[in-house]
Length: 496
Image 1 (cartoon, helix red, strand yellow):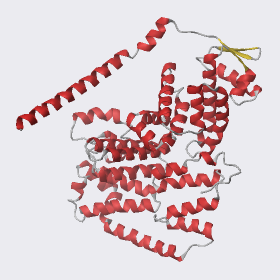
Image 2 (cartoon, one colour):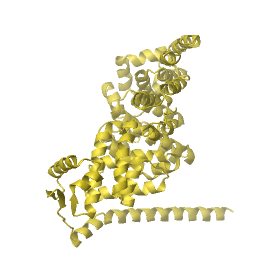
Image 3 (cartoon, rainbow, N blue to C red):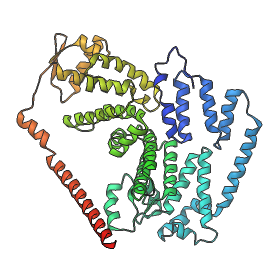
């Protein structure tokens, strides 16, 4: 895709080309729709890219519409492909018809759940249902997904997962709700799962174990939830994929390189989930700051720093009431930024404030940030909130080194007119509970309230016990591992 050279301020920061390789092709379609409507790319180029993405799928009607819009008519081969799609669909339906009818019969399903036969072993005991039919049912779910019928595919995949799950005893009506809310109810059912070894992992739809095939099913479940925009269920599906992936890694069924690649994919898919719905940004920050996922960012996807930086800026004031914790979060972000060779106005804005302390450069980058935000599919809805939080961040840093600030100078730093800066400052002082400032003679005067030595010592040592316990536990783990290795060597010597 090419963008006109006359106005590339927004298009040059578009990350669609960097994000798309880590997404399922169905997840790329919303990004292309946004590009067509909001960016100054050639519409013919975008339409051609969309049509190319559609070719391997079974979304023949959608592909025909795109082909007509691009070339004026649909080729005859698309009509033949449509007939083939319907034939394949009927073949798959006929191949698992008894199982399809059973899944649609809520009364029969309730009986099987209550009798403990709603699983693969129980289903194959029913006359007319075989293990091959279960595989055909899963293939039909995938076929519906390729046709763009994401809701039907989601429902069928949910059934497939439930056949391998070992949830607590519930009624049929509660079973599907438990599957959806498994991640939300993890803390409630975790103890119950530990006490009862027959129960599955509540973080993984109560699956007792996972293999590579089941991991693919969980990825399909996550894709469906994203595409039907059920963000609460998508968050649960994301946790299930993460749990299954880490479990397989620990068991050695996935190599370290494969795990790194899977984590990179998960980070990209999580952008859909965490940038929608309440509390998502905090979870995105927690995920990205985890050491293994931080490694995935620095190694495979440094462009994700844009979303991590934006998330930190948006949630740093509400992540905790403690100012020191917010500063610690910013320090962690700065460490990550220094490990990556990636730059855009959002990243450079934080770098100018937290590393270079260059407020003039930060002002320039802040003006560019608005264009970047409006050009980004994931960040566009947060443009106004981000700009507000960024101005507050500039003001907080400026106040650390100044006692008296001229409103004219403050307006320049915030990329605002003096009158607008004065109104913004008045609202900020009025609504802030932790800011001791006032306006005097067209200036903002900060009333300093320095911590005593006693308060500083208490603040710095408040988590000393936790850190000491963590260090002690790490040392014990290392000592135990060294002892095991020594015993293994001694045993090997004795055997020789």
